[in-house]
Length: 403
Image (cartoon, rainbow, N blue to C red; front, side):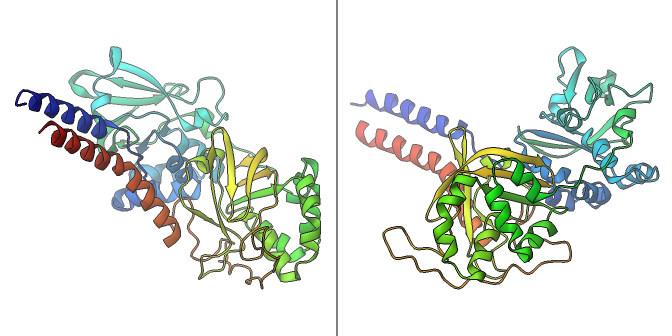
């Protein structure tokens, strides 16, 4: 029996090691991290203004080449538009992980890394790639493929590393790139109802046009962040009888329920944890929310009564995304389950708005989550650590059985 104990111990340790090596989901917020480093406050500010902070936070693997306030002053002195500034700063966000250790272990002493500017499709050819080179005495430099003879920028120090998800490195100055610095024409204004009408959501567009105050709420978020889940025509027609029986305030809340005052790409929809606040969510309660997640390759929107699936993308262009869904989203605040009598409830007033259009105290991609979302995130984190606890229990069970 004594001989069985070492074998059991070995098995237990194997179980524990597997649990410890299992991947654990990591989340980060670039804005909050850099807030602890005031020497990068200007860089941090323009990551938010250009919406690159959202792009960074939604990616699983990223390297940020941060420039201090002095370096940013030189960039701002050139008076680029916000759209051009975004391209220049996007050149400083690499779509792979490069910690300080990796920089000093480059194969053949150099490599090419893709930037967010390259992956955006706005870079011509390979102009959005960054050459990383390790020189003698451990010096590391970065320069864009279209630097045009401009000197490279130097690695200064590591600011924050979360292997192998996020690395924030300080570089000596802004990289030069004529392509990234070129003037950018502003995007064409988005006409929501025209867009919907031309891409299979005409019936929902007509409902918005029939309620001008609701349409105005949607449009007020076009410049600051908006995601709309637009029911296809067949879904709206099937729902027409229920909609007709709602009061005017309830109709308004139902329509507002199909929008959220933040921009969500498909990737962010798949990886988000927690409840989504909507345009119908009142400032001080947790009503009129739903969850969005992935079911295989599909993205679903789940209320307490229905589960709708995204069938197509009408537009996905930061700060606006509109997705077609196969069902009308029904909030429990307005409807009971199908086996109970329909009893439309009084609808809350539309969300109070800041001067920029976003709802008060609603958690967005870069903000602290609501209590409900925090609970969901806590459960998610518990699920990750639960593998370790389960493995520990399994290991103990092996020992008990062995003894």
